[in-house]
Image (cartoon, rainbow, N blue to C red):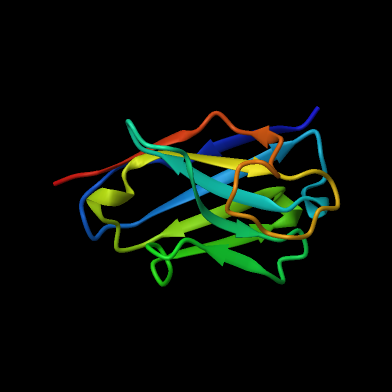
Length: 126
């Protein structure tokens, strides 16, 4: 059974960095396109980044482009989200999600992702 577990969240000052990890079990991650989403209190869950299963294509939300980097290490069954120059507006619960096996197109929308982790909290505050 596919399971996704996020880790790496925490409290960081504005301008700081965090690296989130999304580790999969029950599957071979090579076959899955993975997305990162976030949800702040009172707001809709929004797509942040995505990396295709081949790693060839990726997507970044406009507000994080240039600050966040997504990568994958299929040997470790893990996808990372490196977040630099964090801003208070980045504070949210961050979720990773997987599309169906063999899907290749990144998406910023929730619909293509049937599998979700439990989330990790990111707090940006001085």
